[in-house]
Every structure is written in C-alpha cells, then in structure tokens.
Length: 279
Ligand SMILES: [Zn+2]
Image (cartoon, rainbow, N blue to C red; front, side, top):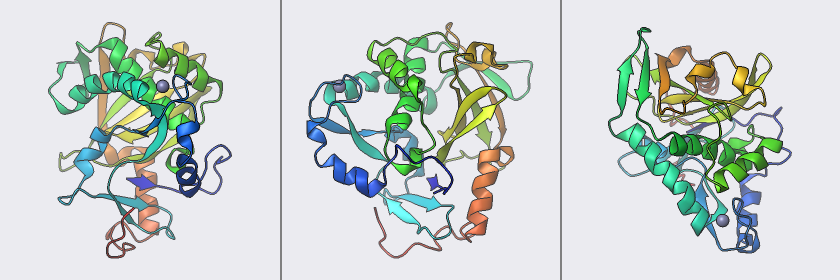
C-alpha cells in the first residue's frame, strides 16, 4: 500500500487517522452512512479485503510505504477500515463485492478484440458489478482516513448513496468506470494499492484508483455520457472492455516510483521500518 501525504490537497473534510479512531469510540451512536438509521456500526472496509490479500507476506502482514520521506514504513495487519455501516448495509454491499471478487480471482469469460492489448470481458452481472464500482467510489468519498483525502464527491455522494441503497445501478455512464490492466515485465501481478487521486480529463472530473492489478478510472460528471471512451464503461449487456498497458507507463505509478526513489525507499522499501513496527 503506498500512501502520499500531500500538503496541498484538500483535507478539509477528512480527519487524521488518530482523530477518526477517537471518533469511532462513540460511533455506535451515529447513523449508518448508507441507510442513515442509528444502529451499531461495523468496521467497514473502504477497499474490500480481497484486494489486499495478494499483498500479505507469509506472516500475514501488509507493508505500508509512504512516498513522503519523513513518514516511516509500517506493517499493517489489515486494510483500512472505519465504522461506517450497520450490519444489514454491510451485507447489502457484500452482495456486490462477491460478484466482483469472482471476476478478479476466478476465471472470467472474455473475447479478444482487434486491438492487441484489449479484451472484452463478457457475461458480467451488470447490476452487481456496476453497484460494486459505485460502492468503492462512494466509500472512498465518505472515508475519513487520509489515504482517501483526494476523493470528495460533493453532491454526487448523496446521489450515489441513494442508488446503492435502492440497488439502482443507473446507466453505464452514471459514475462510469474504465478499467486498465497493469502489466509488469515479469508478467506478475502489480500488487500495490495506491492512494486515489483526483484529476481532470478535458472538462471531466475523474478519480483514479490502483488496486487489483488494475487502474480504475471513474468519470464523475453530469456529462459523463459524452466522455470520449464511454464505450469502455461497463455496458448494460454485461460486457466491459479492458485494455492492458505496462504499469511503468502509467502516470500514477511513475509518480509513486519517483516519490519512493526520492525517499530512498525504492531499492530498500524496509529502509524506514523499525523492528516490530505494526499498525
Ligand atoms: Zn445501514
């Protein structure tokens, strides 16, 4: 997991991890973020645990490396969780996750395309995979942890909440997501999760996530229907075009490598790790 504590980003609505941990003590009294009912809250994953699994070492530890030179490298016992959802809502979202997990970790059905590095995944459950995509974006948007500080959805947050609650996947262009597989020279999976970033492509607001060996590009705009590349959103017929590109050519990855190199953590990621440093 690679984090970057940027000084210029908007951290207005996000709290520090310490503050959010303190808030969690009283969170039993707070409403569930999805159904808004006051119920005991679960410690919900923002990114599903199955995306962290390939990153665990043989002692079931994750290595958290920051590109900020002053920040120490840590072992973590599990991915980022926060008290956000009641049990029922956790189960509701889990239904979307199960289908997506199969897509990433079991075989999936696809066709070759005329483009040598592009396949067309098919026979997907449009509703569930689409709702999963939106749940990932939405959870990152409501999370307090600084890892997700760049994801601020504004009015879209409430719109997505209602769609998730009603199991309404919307049109393919509603928070459409483009997926790009990341290839490495060793042909092994690109097993890192990077801090999501916000950017613009032309007039469109976009969020980029890297997880599951892929780059996930969400187009968050009322005009997303007209986005050039809208044929690469998950389609209502259950097909999803996926291009693959060398990981080293992806700007977010290049930035990560530069940051780690600057902090002296590229050759030895353990450089700033002290014995037994676990979070
Ligand atoms: Zn709930």
